[in-house]
Image (cartoon, rainbow, N blue to C red; front, side):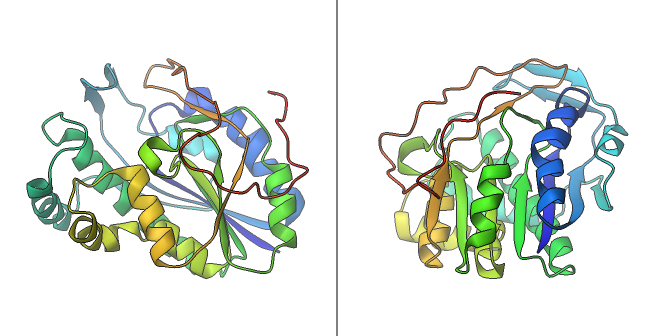
Length: 260
């Protein structure tokens, strides 16, 4: 079994999160198969965000804590993303913050896609897409165990924070190349999304749209992860199971794992 773990986005808090990543993400993967660790990460000296309340300097070398097999560092915003942002603006601002979160979403989707392209060179059976700014409270071992037994393409998602009838896009485990591609290449369908929905681009609803469009089944698991802001502040998350998005559990025997 070949497994790729793909990190993407901004590594704002790895000093706080890397131990949980090693214990609850990487070690279970290595027990299940040949594992490669990859990342596409943005490099910036400082983060300022009115929405998250962050205003802090960033360590440009903290990605080394992950002991990656390969990493691509992005020091400037790819110019084509500006055009995509302008295309999305007429459809509205789902966050009502002068398109700041929309811009961040587009950058994140680009980083996700770039990390996936790195994984494709390794022809993995399972791909994990993980944000580096999350503390992973529970081991992903039960999810991996279930996915190893699967033969169909599918995506496994957390069963909490399925915002506004969308799917939780914090992290995911994908079985099979079609599932991984549908999850990772969402930037390619943003124009189709706004044309079909006639509303503002929204991250969780985009994920549901992309998976349903590709006819990739989605299932859920209870394992939890919390965002960590720059400086180490842990975000209080709502881990209650979604009431609006009812997806089947990956495996009936999966239950809440104790925090470690």
